[in-house]
Image 1 (tube, rainbow, N blue to C red):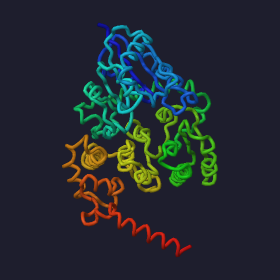
Image 2 (cartoon, rainbow, N blue to C red):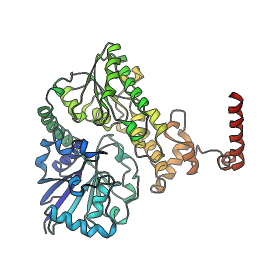
Image 3 (tube, rainbow, N blue to C red):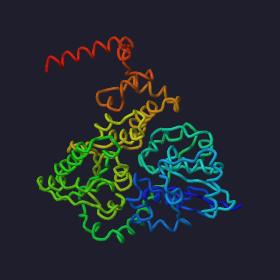
Image 4 (cartoon, rainbow, N blue to C red):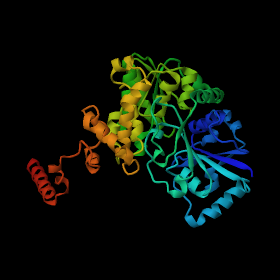
Length: 454
């Protein structure tokens, strides 16, 4: 019987990862390969989709057909829709008819399997085997949601980029899924094709980017409710000041595609005040395209995966900023951004520390195994203890000896207490937060203090 692969992608970076996996033979052979694109923006109608991204043309010939998930389920939103159980057979028949699948055996290749649209996609094709590919640092963290027996038992492989050599992904490990690396040389080869196609489509904006500049990456964290607008603006200003303090007179700011345009005005003014010139890159190209076309001297940002690709894939110096605040703010503790922030905070130098930035070298595989791996596994256990009970002994051992003022920011005392781990609130004081009398006395004391000050 004919075999068709349905490959779901929502970003150009993800599509490039798929192309590299196909070029490297990481996926089973198939008679047809259909790329299913999904625009997950909050208002997809206002943001260009993957098919319109500069450089996509370089990837197009890897697939026999390209279809839109948004158009398929319109007017429903890809991030908010999942099929009801009694509608699944109807949806599968509909998609087989719409995409001319007939009676083909279907295989799914999806990203972010824990949430829609990937989870919804997997639920529609109930009997199809699933390959998961990870296109960022989240693959090193734990699976954030239960997938259900009808999904987790069908996952055959986890494909990921070797962004932190020596660090093994936690994602899907609780289901016995073995991770496999998409070869770096294949991925960089694909990115070079995307860069060439993007330069052709990018026009003057890419040509105007100065070579050897400091590249600053915006992430629009206030839209996620992690930072306030004022705090994010301050974060960007700190990036400009840090780059200028390191002696960079040419600075490029690459804003998040959905960030407000007026955010860049204070950055331009601040750079000018510090004797530097700031160029804003508004063309929605991959950061890796800028690495190839303009070869920045430094890449700085918060916790973007592009920080790690700059170092791991292209040997460009990198620096972080704002990660300490993010470790404090991420809520709940299980927030899936916690491991990416942890990795960047632990492995990269602080942009404000000019000596550390100049002296920094990427950690070796041995250093990763000795320092970063135990930290990430401990944080991962604290995030999803029920899914990873086999990591408890490692977490206890690490926390018993490694909790210091430098490592405490990765943890919350309340979380350690709820899991009965070292670093928890002492047992003799554990009653206090739950004691109604103590809380009532504390509220009364605060009221009296407020009245006295008033």
